[in-house]
Image 1 (cartoon, rainbow, N blue to C red):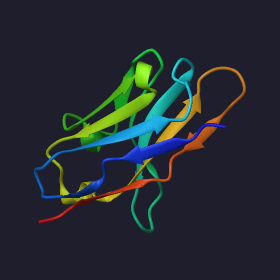
Image 2 (cartoon, one colour):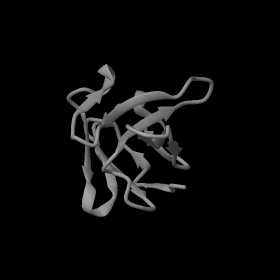
Image 3 (cartoon, rainbow, N blue to C red):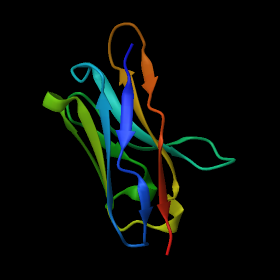
Length: 118
Protein backbone atom coordinates (compact mmCIF):
# COMPACT_ATOMS: atom_id res chain seq x y z
CA UNK A 1 0.00 0.00 0.00
CA UNK A 2 1.20 3.50 -0.85
CA UNK A 3 0.10 6.61 0.99
CA UNK A 4 0.23 10.00 -0.67
CA UNK A 5 0.12 13.16 1.43
CA UNK A 6 -0.48 16.51 -0.24
CA UNK A 7 0.38 19.90 1.19
CA UNK A 8 0.72 23.50 0.08
CA UNK A 9 -2.84 24.44 -0.73
CA UNK A 10 -4.48 27.62 0.50
CA UNK A 11 -5.95 30.96 -0.42
CA UNK A 12 -4.17 33.15 -2.94
CA UNK A 13 -5.08 36.25 -4.93
CA UNK A 14 -5.43 36.15 -8.70
CA UNK A 15 -2.02 36.35 -10.32
CA UNK A 16 -0.35 34.78 -7.31
CA UNK A 17 1.57 31.52 -6.94
CA UNK A 18 1.42 28.35 -4.89
CA UNK A 19 3.48 25.20 -4.78
CA UNK A 20 1.83 21.90 -3.99
CA UNK A 21 3.79 18.95 -2.68
CA UNK A 22 2.92 15.26 -2.59
CA UNK A 23 5.02 12.92 -0.49
CA UNK A 24 4.82 9.17 -1.01
CA UNK A 25 5.10 6.78 1.91
CA UNK A 26 7.67 4.62 0.20
CA UNK A 27 9.90 4.58 -2.79
CA UNK A 28 7.71 4.15 -5.85
CA UNK A 29 9.07 6.61 -8.30
CA UNK A 30 11.04 4.16 -10.38
CA UNK A 31 7.92 2.62 -11.91
CA UNK A 32 5.12 5.12 -11.23
CA UNK A 33 3.74 8.01 -13.17
CA UNK A 34 2.86 10.82 -10.77
CA UNK A 35 0.09 13.26 -11.54
CA UNK A 36 -2.03 16.07 -10.20
CA UNK A 37 -5.76 16.17 -10.74
CA UNK A 38 -8.33 18.70 -9.62
CA UNK A 39 -12.04 18.66 -8.97
CA UNK A 40 -14.74 21.24 -8.34
CA UNK A 41 -18.24 20.52 -7.01
CA UNK A 42 -20.48 18.88 -9.59
CA UNK A 43 -17.67 18.27 -12.05
CA UNK A 44 -15.52 15.29 -12.91
CA UNK A 45 -11.97 15.10 -11.68
CA UNK A 46 -9.65 16.34 -14.40
CA UNK A 47 -5.98 15.81 -15.13
CA UNK A 48 -3.86 18.90 -14.52
CA UNK A 49 -0.33 17.58 -15.08
CA UNK A 50 1.58 14.32 -15.11
CA UNK A 51 5.21 13.24 -15.06
CA UNK A 52 6.47 9.77 -15.90
CA UNK A 53 9.28 7.92 -14.18
CA UNK A 54 11.45 8.96 -17.10
CA UNK A 55 10.62 12.61 -16.65
CA UNK A 56 8.22 13.15 -19.55
CA UNK A 57 5.48 15.62 -18.75
CA UNK A 58 2.09 16.58 -20.06
CA UNK A 59 -0.31 19.32 -19.06
CA UNK A 60 -3.92 20.29 -19.47
CA UNK A 61 -4.27 23.04 -22.07
CA UNK A 62 -5.73 25.35 -19.44
CA UNK A 63 -2.53 25.34 -17.34
CA UNK A 64 0.19 25.17 -20.00
CA UNK A 65 2.76 27.88 -19.49
CA UNK A 66 1.54 28.57 -15.94
CA UNK A 67 1.99 25.28 -14.04
CA UNK A 68 5.09 23.11 -13.79
CA UNK A 69 5.21 19.55 -12.47
CA UNK A 70 8.46 18.11 -11.16
CA UNK A 71 9.66 15.24 -9.03
CA UNK A 72 12.44 14.62 -6.52
CA UNK A 73 13.12 10.90 -6.56
CA UNK A 74 15.40 11.05 -3.54
CA UNK A 75 12.59 12.53 -1.47
CA UNK A 76 9.75 10.49 -3.02
CA UNK A 77 8.02 13.79 -3.66
CA UNK A 78 6.26 15.37 -6.61
CA UNK A 79 5.57 19.09 -6.88
CA UNK A 80 3.19 21.32 -8.76
CA UNK A 81 4.36 24.90 -9.12
CA UNK A 82 1.35 27.07 -9.98
CA UNK A 83 1.93 30.60 -11.24
CA UNK A 84 -0.40 33.28 -12.58
CA UNK A 85 -3.28 31.67 -10.76
CA UNK A 86 -6.80 32.43 -11.90
CA UNK A 87 -10.14 32.08 -10.10
CA UNK A 88 -10.89 29.19 -12.47
CA UNK A 89 -8.03 27.25 -10.86
CA UNK A 90 -9.99 27.04 -7.61
CA UNK A 91 -10.49 23.36 -6.82
CA UNK A 92 -9.43 20.49 -4.62
CA UNK A 93 -6.16 19.18 -5.99
CA UNK A 94 -5.36 15.49 -5.72
CA UNK A 95 -2.07 13.67 -6.10
CA UNK A 96 -2.11 10.40 -8.02
CA UNK A 97 0.39 7.57 -8.46
CA UNK A 98 -0.14 5.07 -11.26
CA UNK A 99 2.10 2.09 -11.80
CA UNK A 100 3.62 1.98 -15.28
CA UNK A 101 4.55 -1.71 -15.43
CA UNK A 102 3.53 -4.92 -13.70
CA UNK A 103 0.40 -5.29 -11.62
CA UNK A 104 -1.89 -2.26 -12.16
CA UNK A 105 -1.89 -0.03 -9.10
CA UNK A 106 -3.45 3.37 -8.65
CA UNK A 107 -3.27 5.52 -5.51
CA UNK A 108 -4.79 8.84 -4.49
CA UNK A 109 -4.01 11.42 -1.86
CA UNK A 110 -6.64 13.02 0.34
CA UNK A 111 -6.68 16.30 -1.59
CA UNK A 112 -5.72 19.86 -0.79
CA UNK A 113 -7.89 22.92 -1.36
CA UNK A 114 -6.68 25.72 -3.59
CA UNK A 115 -8.77 28.89 -3.61
CA UNK A 116 -7.96 31.79 -5.92
CA UNK A 117 -9.90 34.86 -4.89
CA UNK A 118 -9.44 38.53 -4.20
